[in-house]
Image 1 (cartoon, helix red, strand yellow):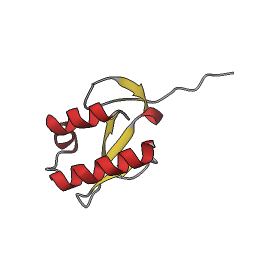
Image 2 (image 1 turned 90 degrees about the horizontal axis):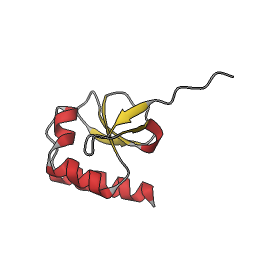
Image 3 (image 1 turned 90 degrees about the vertical axis):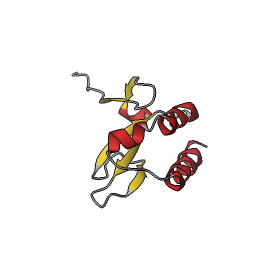
Image 4 (image 1 turned 135 degrees about the vertical axis):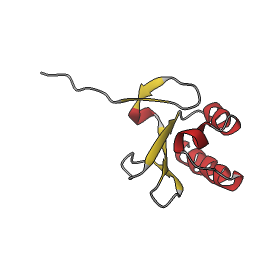
Length: 90
């Protein structure tokens, strides 16, 4: 049998390559809206984060998501993202 290739992505905070399924995708939609994409299939520019809280804090502090998604992200959006991520991880 042929082995399937596992898609790898890089976390914007810790810069580690991990399988796509282990990461959380943050998307900038064509309407410039920032959302958490748990399916990994929504259209738009995506950035990936580890499921660890430290990576989210690093990305927020160093504005890694803003650079990757090429858009300014407000604090209330960061708080909403953190609630969604924490809610899904539990």
